[in-house]
Every structure is written in C-alpha cells, then in structure tokens.
Length: 181
Image (tube, rainbow, N blue to C red; front, top):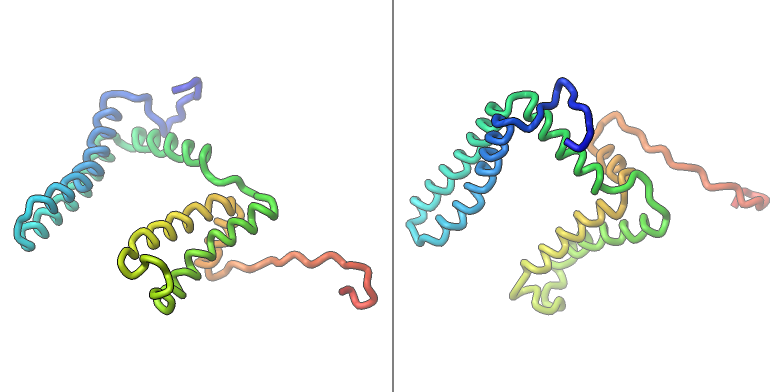
C-alpha cells in the first residue's frame, strides 16, 4: 500500500489475496476467451451451446471461489482499491452550463437516432448494410455522455428509479419587469 493505514476490513496483499485475484481474473478470462475459441471450432450448434454454457457457469463458480479464497478482508481490500480507482477517474460532482449542455446533446443524440433510424434507414449511408458501427458508436456516446454530465446527472438519473424521490426545480430570478417576466 502507499502509506495508507489498513483498516480491520482490509487485508495486506498476502498469498490468499494473490491467489483470489488470480482466480478472479481466470473467472473473467475463461468465458471471454473460451467462448471465442468454442465459436471458432465449427462444432455443432448443440455442442457449441453446451460448451458455452459450461464456460459461463464455470466462470461464475470461479468468481465465487475467488471471493471465498480471498475472504472478507481480501474482498474488502479489492473493493476499496477498485472503488478508489473509480472515484479518481469518475465524473466530477458538478459541471458548468456549457459542459452540461454538451453532455445533454451527447446523451440525447443516440436516443433520438435509435428512435428515428428505423424510419429513415434508407437515407442513412451504409446503415442497412452495416448497422453495427452505428449501434456501437451510439452506445459509446451514451456512456461517455454520463461522464461528461457529471455526478449530479447520475443522481438525477438514479432518482428516476426511486419512487419517493422529488424534483426540485430552481426558480428563475426576477428580471424586474412589471409581471416578473
């Protein structure tokens, strides 16, 4: 560690933590690489499906095994390191008006494109032949917009899924006109 004091929930990197991390990496690596290898073997559909299912289940089992090997302190250590990394590179809490407006355009453009593309697909160059690049670009733009919009937008987005949340809209400042216009 870099000069940080270990809490009771964190463990110093020992052999259990290192073994747990190796198993955890294997639990991610095995399905990803294994599925691409199985798809390229040219096996029957039933065999490909069976092997793919086995690889996915084995990845999940290895993930659980990794947490068991690391133990609660090891898992807390990994979680704190990962969350610390996310906080360092995550979106800022608040952003300026220009950045917010740009982020809203980035957020809305892929949604609007997705809604309108079935109706105007013949007018979009290459969309009918190759729709995947358009889909990937839209998805990446949508995810990037969440980082451009900042942490306050994440809270707004999260509040959509909380039943008891309430919207607070700031009032416009009085312009001094006779009717407050």
